[in-house]
Length: 274
Image 1 (cartoon, rainbow, N blue to C red):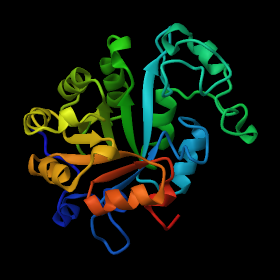
Image 2 (cartoon, rainbow, N blue to C red; image 1 turned 120 degrees about the horizontal axis):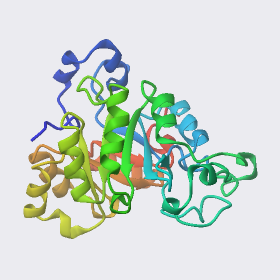
Image 3 (cartoon, rainbow, N blue to C red; image 1 turned 45 degrees about the vertical axis):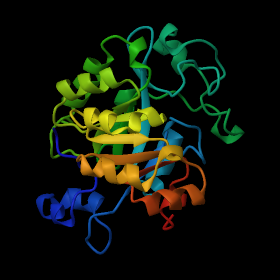
Protein backbone atom coordinates (compact mmCIF):
# COMPACT_ATOMS: atom_id res chain seq x y z
CA UNK A 1 0.00 0.00 0.00
CA UNK A 2 1.26 3.51 -0.77
CA UNK A 3 2.15 5.46 2.31
CA UNK A 4 -0.38 8.19 3.06
CA UNK A 5 0.87 11.74 2.73
CA UNK A 6 -1.62 12.97 5.29
CA UNK A 7 -1.03 12.77 9.00
CA UNK A 8 2.71 12.37 8.51
CA UNK A 9 5.04 13.16 11.38
CA UNK A 10 6.87 16.44 11.73
CA UNK A 11 10.07 14.58 10.84
CA UNK A 12 8.82 14.34 7.27
CA UNK A 13 9.75 17.99 6.77
CA UNK A 14 13.37 16.89 6.76
CA UNK A 15 12.69 14.88 3.61
CA UNK A 16 11.05 17.71 1.71
CA UNK A 17 12.74 20.23 -0.52
CA UNK A 18 12.63 23.87 0.64
CA UNK A 19 9.97 24.53 -2.00
CA UNK A 20 7.73 21.78 -0.65
CA UNK A 21 8.31 22.94 2.91
CA UNK A 22 6.81 26.30 2.00
CA UNK A 23 3.55 24.47 1.28
CA UNK A 24 3.80 21.92 4.07
CA UNK A 25 4.97 24.05 6.96
CA UNK A 26 3.53 26.72 9.17
CA UNK A 27 5.53 29.83 9.96
CA UNK A 28 7.16 28.05 12.91
CA UNK A 29 8.48 25.37 10.58
CA UNK A 30 6.27 22.52 11.75
CA UNK A 31 4.22 20.34 9.43
CA UNK A 32 0.64 21.55 9.27
CA UNK A 33 -1.77 19.39 11.20
CA UNK A 34 -4.41 19.65 8.47
CA UNK A 35 -4.83 21.06 4.98
CA UNK A 36 -7.32 23.74 4.00
CA UNK A 37 -8.97 22.61 0.76
CA UNK A 38 -11.07 25.10 -1.22
CA UNK A 39 -14.12 23.16 -2.45
CA UNK A 40 -14.60 23.88 -6.16
CA UNK A 41 -12.40 26.85 -5.36
CA UNK A 42 -13.51 29.42 -2.81
CA UNK A 43 -17.05 28.70 -3.95
CA UNK A 44 -18.68 30.52 -1.04
CA UNK A 45 -17.40 33.75 -2.56
CA UNK A 46 -17.16 33.11 -6.31
CA UNK A 47 -18.85 30.82 -8.85
CA UNK A 48 -17.79 27.23 -8.26
CA UNK A 49 -15.22 25.56 -10.52
CA UNK A 50 -14.25 28.79 -12.27
CA UNK A 51 -10.99 30.68 -12.52
CA UNK A 52 -12.53 33.36 -10.29
CA UNK A 53 -13.13 30.81 -7.53
CA UNK A 54 -9.70 29.22 -7.88
CA UNK A 55 -7.93 32.60 -7.90
CA UNK A 56 -9.86 33.58 -4.78
CA UNK A 57 -8.79 30.34 -3.08
CA UNK A 58 -5.13 31.06 -3.85
CA UNK A 59 -5.54 34.62 -2.54
CA UNK A 60 -7.03 33.14 0.65
CA UNK A 61 -3.96 30.89 1.07
CA UNK A 62 -5.82 27.60 0.63
CA UNK A 63 -3.46 24.64 0.60
CA UNK A 64 -5.45 22.93 -2.17
CA UNK A 65 -8.15 23.72 -4.67
CA UNK A 66 -10.66 20.93 -5.29
CA UNK A 67 -11.92 20.47 -8.84
CA UNK A 68 -14.34 18.17 -10.68
CA UNK A 69 -13.31 16.73 -14.03
CA UNK A 70 -15.64 15.55 -16.81
CA UNK A 71 -15.38 15.33 -20.62
CA UNK A 72 -17.10 17.13 -23.47
CA UNK A 73 -18.77 15.36 -26.36
CA UNK A 74 -15.69 15.94 -28.51
CA UNK A 75 -13.20 14.72 -25.91
CA UNK A 76 -12.03 17.80 -24.02
CA UNK A 77 -11.53 17.46 -20.27
CA UNK A 78 -13.49 20.20 -18.52
CA UNK A 79 -13.96 21.33 -14.92
CA UNK A 80 -17.58 21.32 -13.77
CA UNK A 81 -19.40 19.59 -10.92
CA UNK A 82 -22.87 18.62 -12.15
CA UNK A 83 -23.26 16.16 -15.01
CA UNK A 84 -25.54 18.77 -16.61
CA UNK A 85 -24.87 22.47 -17.16
CA UNK A 86 -28.33 23.58 -16.04
CA UNK A 87 -27.61 24.71 -12.47
CA UNK A 88 -24.38 26.66 -12.92
CA UNK A 89 -24.65 28.09 -16.44
CA UNK A 90 -27.16 29.74 -18.75
CA UNK A 91 -27.35 26.57 -20.85
CA UNK A 92 -29.07 23.21 -20.65
CA UNK A 93 -28.04 19.64 -21.32
CA UNK A 94 -25.60 16.97 -20.23
CA UNK A 95 -21.90 17.83 -20.20
CA UNK A 96 -21.13 14.69 -22.19
CA UNK A 97 -23.59 15.67 -24.93
CA UNK A 98 -22.17 19.16 -25.52
CA UNK A 99 -19.07 20.00 -27.54
CA UNK A 100 -16.28 21.99 -25.98
CA UNK A 101 -17.23 24.99 -28.12
CA UNK A 102 -20.79 24.77 -26.80
CA UNK A 103 -19.60 24.45 -23.21
CA UNK A 104 -17.16 27.30 -23.59
CA UNK A 105 -19.86 29.62 -24.91
CA UNK A 106 -21.87 29.35 -21.68
CA UNK A 107 -21.91 31.90 -18.86
CA UNK A 108 -20.73 30.01 -15.78
CA UNK A 109 -20.66 33.00 -13.43
CA UNK A 110 -23.96 34.87 -13.43
CA UNK A 111 -25.73 32.21 -11.36
CA UNK A 112 -23.56 33.32 -8.43
CA UNK A 113 -23.73 37.10 -8.85
CA UNK A 114 -23.91 39.66 -11.68
CA UNK A 115 -20.28 40.69 -11.25
CA UNK A 116 -19.19 37.23 -12.35
CA UNK A 117 -21.03 37.35 -15.67
CA UNK A 118 -18.94 35.86 -18.46
CA UNK A 119 -16.94 33.38 -16.37
CA UNK A 120 -16.26 30.30 -18.47
CA UNK A 121 -16.09 26.58 -17.78
CA UNK A 122 -12.33 25.93 -17.51
CA UNK A 123 -10.47 23.05 -19.06
CA UNK A 124 -8.51 20.60 -16.94
CA UNK A 125 -5.34 21.65 -18.76
CA UNK A 126 -5.93 25.31 -17.93
CA UNK A 127 -6.34 24.57 -14.26
CA UNK A 128 -3.21 22.41 -14.13
CA UNK A 129 -1.12 25.01 -15.95
CA UNK A 130 -2.41 27.97 -13.95
CA UNK A 131 -2.29 26.54 -10.44
CA UNK A 132 0.26 23.76 -10.07
CA UNK A 133 3.04 25.24 -7.99
CA UNK A 134 0.65 27.82 -6.50
CA UNK A 135 -1.63 25.41 -4.63
CA UNK A 136 -2.23 21.71 -4.41
CA UNK A 137 -4.93 20.30 -6.67
CA UNK A 138 -7.44 17.75 -5.40
CA UNK A 139 -8.93 16.23 -8.55
CA UNK A 140 -12.32 14.53 -8.37
CA UNK A 141 -13.26 12.26 -11.24
CA UNK A 142 -16.94 13.11 -11.50
CA UNK A 143 -19.20 10.27 -12.66
CA UNK A 144 -16.33 8.51 -14.47
CA UNK A 145 -18.69 5.69 -15.40
CA UNK A 146 -20.11 8.12 -18.00
CA UNK A 147 -16.70 8.75 -19.54
CA UNK A 148 -14.92 5.59 -20.62
CA UNK A 149 -11.16 6.04 -20.53
CA UNK A 150 -11.15 9.30 -18.59
CA UNK A 151 -8.66 7.90 -16.10
CA UNK A 152 -6.09 7.38 -18.85
CA UNK A 153 -6.73 10.89 -20.17
CA UNK A 154 -6.25 12.48 -16.76
CA UNK A 155 -3.08 10.43 -16.25
CA UNK A 156 -1.68 11.60 -19.59
CA UNK A 157 -2.24 15.26 -18.73
CA UNK A 158 -0.49 14.84 -15.39
CA UNK A 159 2.42 12.93 -16.90
CA UNK A 160 2.85 15.59 -19.58
CA UNK A 161 3.48 18.10 -16.79
CA UNK A 162 5.66 15.82 -14.68
CA UNK A 163 2.96 15.80 -12.00
CA UNK A 164 2.98 12.04 -11.63
CA UNK A 165 6.27 11.99 -9.72
CA UNK A 166 6.59 11.63 -5.96
CA UNK A 167 8.31 14.98 -5.47
CA UNK A 168 5.19 16.69 -6.79
CA UNK A 169 3.07 15.65 -3.83
CA UNK A 170 0.44 18.35 -4.23
CA UNK A 171 -1.74 16.31 -6.59
CA UNK A 172 -4.41 13.96 -5.18
CA UNK A 173 -7.14 12.17 -7.15
CA UNK A 174 -10.44 11.04 -5.65
CA UNK A 175 -13.83 9.68 -6.70
CA UNK A 176 -17.05 8.17 -5.41
CA UNK A 177 -16.46 5.46 -8.02
CA UNK A 178 -14.14 3.01 -6.28
CA UNK A 179 -13.32 1.08 -9.46
CA UNK A 180 -12.14 4.34 -10.99
CA UNK A 181 -9.94 5.03 -7.96
CA UNK A 182 -8.40 1.56 -8.30
CA UNK A 183 -7.73 2.23 -11.97
CA UNK A 184 -6.05 5.56 -11.28
CA UNK A 185 -3.96 3.91 -8.59
CA UNK A 186 -2.67 1.47 -11.19
CA UNK A 187 -2.06 4.15 -13.81
CA UNK A 188 -0.41 6.60 -11.41
CA UNK A 189 1.07 4.50 -8.60
CA UNK A 190 2.98 7.44 -7.10
CA UNK A 191 0.01 9.81 -6.96
CA UNK A 192 -2.12 9.64 -3.79
CA UNK A 193 -5.75 8.58 -4.33
CA UNK A 194 -8.84 8.81 -2.17
CA UNK A 195 -12.29 7.30 -1.93
CA UNK A 196 -15.30 9.57 -1.38
CA UNK A 197 -18.40 8.52 0.51
CA UNK A 198 -21.34 9.78 2.53
CA UNK A 199 -22.42 6.28 3.56
CA UNK A 200 -21.88 4.80 6.99
CA UNK A 201 -21.89 1.40 5.26
CA UNK A 202 -18.38 2.28 4.08
CA UNK A 203 -17.10 2.88 7.62
CA UNK A 204 -17.14 -0.74 8.78
CA UNK A 205 -13.85 -2.39 9.67
CA UNK A 206 -14.13 -4.66 6.64
CA UNK A 207 -14.83 -1.79 4.23
CA UNK A 208 -12.02 0.38 5.58
CA UNK A 209 -9.52 -2.48 5.36
CA UNK A 210 -10.49 -2.99 1.71
CA UNK A 211 -10.04 0.71 0.93
CA UNK A 212 -6.64 0.67 2.62
CA UNK A 213 -5.38 -1.90 0.10
CA UNK A 214 -5.35 0.76 -2.63
CA UNK A 215 -6.34 4.19 -1.27
CA UNK A 216 -4.26 6.76 0.57
CA UNK A 217 -7.28 8.75 1.72
CA UNK A 218 -10.75 7.97 3.04
CA UNK A 219 -12.79 11.13 2.42
CA UNK A 220 -16.23 11.13 4.09
CA UNK A 221 -18.93 13.75 4.45
CA UNK A 222 -18.53 15.44 7.81
CA UNK A 223 -21.91 14.16 8.97
CA UNK A 224 -20.48 10.67 9.44
CA UNK A 225 -17.15 11.68 10.97
CA UNK A 226 -16.44 10.52 14.52
CA UNK A 227 -13.21 10.37 16.51
CA UNK A 228 -13.45 6.58 16.35
CA UNK A 229 -13.62 6.70 12.56
CA UNK A 230 -10.67 9.07 12.32
CA UNK A 231 -8.61 6.79 14.57
CA UNK A 232 -9.54 3.70 12.53
CA UNK A 233 -8.60 5.39 9.26
CA UNK A 234 -5.28 6.56 10.67
CA UNK A 235 -4.65 3.12 12.12
CA UNK A 236 -4.89 1.67 8.62
CA UNK A 237 -2.33 4.14 7.26
CA UNK A 238 -4.80 6.36 5.41
CA UNK A 239 -5.46 10.07 5.72
CA UNK A 240 -8.95 11.48 6.14
CA UNK A 241 -10.26 14.55 4.34
CA UNK A 242 -13.82 15.61 5.13
CA UNK A 243 -16.38 17.74 3.29
CA UNK A 244 -18.16 20.10 2.87
CA UNK A 245 -17.66 22.81 5.50
CA UNK A 246 -20.02 25.75 5.20
CA UNK A 247 -19.94 27.06 8.77
CA UNK A 248 -17.26 27.92 11.33
CA UNK A 249 -18.83 25.38 13.67
CA UNK A 250 -18.40 22.55 11.15
CA UNK A 251 -14.79 23.59 10.61
CA UNK A 252 -14.09 23.56 14.35
CA UNK A 253 -15.73 20.15 14.71
CA UNK A 254 -13.41 18.64 12.10
CA UNK A 255 -10.38 20.34 13.63
CA UNK A 256 -11.33 18.78 16.96
CA UNK A 257 -11.70 15.39 15.29
CA UNK A 258 -8.12 15.74 14.01
CA UNK A 259 -8.85 15.11 10.34
CA UNK A 260 -6.02 15.62 7.87
CA UNK A 261 -7.83 17.98 5.53
CA UNK A 262 -10.96 20.12 5.64
CA UNK A 263 -12.77 20.65 2.35
CA UNK A 264 -14.67 23.92 2.51
CA UNK A 265 -16.53 26.50 0.44
CA UNK A 266 -15.10 29.13 2.81
CA UNK A 267 -11.32 28.81 3.34
CA UNK A 268 -11.42 31.60 5.93
CA UNK A 269 -13.63 29.45 8.17
CA UNK A 270 -10.74 27.00 8.42
CA UNK A 271 -7.79 29.39 8.52
CA UNK A 272 -8.48 32.64 10.40
CA UNK A 273 -5.42 34.31 8.82
CA UNK A 274 -7.75 35.01 5.92
